[in-house]
Image (cartoon, rainbow, N blue to C red; front, side):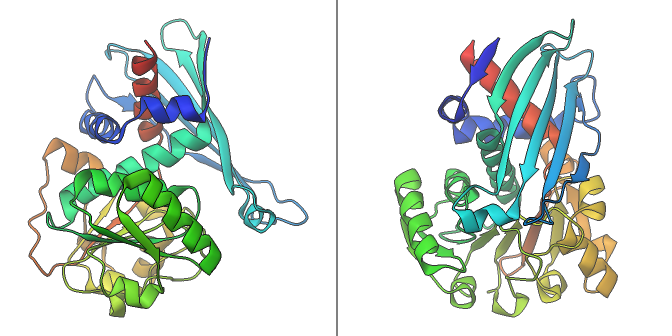
Amino acid sequence: MLNMDAAAVKAATPWPALIDALEAMFAAEGTENGCVFPLRAHHQVPRIDQPEATLLLMPAWSAPAAAAGVIGVKLVTVFPGNAAKGMAAIDGAYVVFDGEDGRLRAVLDGGELTARRTAAASGLAARHLSREDSKVLVIVGTGRLAANLAAAHCAVRPIERILVCGRSAEKAARAAAAIVAETGRAAEPAEISAAAAQADIISAATLSETPLIRGADLKPGAHVDLVGAFKPTMRESDDEVMRRAATVVVDTYGGGFSEAGDVVLALESGALTKEKVVAELAELARGDKRIARGAEDITVFKSVGAALEDLAAAMLCLKQAG
């Protein structure tokens, strides 16, 4: 059985290859070479000091006709209160079974796999939705995803400057230093409203229950990447973001309309209509739908994560490991 720690998972999933692997997996969705991925299961496991503690189970398996038959399950814990303890809020493991005989084949570090596939999905969306000349990237959030998101966006667009926004100036400075080390691009802490006004791409990965990105702050032509809110009660953008958006894309319709608070709450308020949610990633990957963006159009991508992304990343890890 193969065991891959965080360093091994990172080494096996370089950004261009990982983004391409996700695009291929999304493109194959619904075909004989695709995969099956039931909507993930949420379980609240509240602790005394962490009432929002959550366990997520995300299964996926390749279709019978696929060449490399595997079954994968990701087990993830989300403990938002860990941040106050200086600990990661998200942890987990990815377990791979053989699709032919059910043998346990591999256990992969779930935190690293999640961080990289999540950022790769944002990079894939940005490749389809953001302006090709995007140079200023704003990262909202200072956790593990910050450097990964910055690197994924740098892999698809000519980013020159990165601004990092967080509730703690110290954490923002630390995240900026990590981004410099990861990407080689200039990065510095910034205040969110001023940063948003400069952003060609603004990417948020937080566990916020209240809006952080205001539509009034966005400049024309910006691309908004919303990653963190994974429950219908959570949101990182206000109604004005959705009101100003020319185009909204979700990773999957199932997750977007049922779990994504940024979408669900904006639909409830009337700031967003279902007609404006024009595509899911599979449709962009297959070329079924193409986004003809104007130079001043604001685009939005909202992800909550899909198990096929984990499976694509895990299969790339197995391939790289031989």
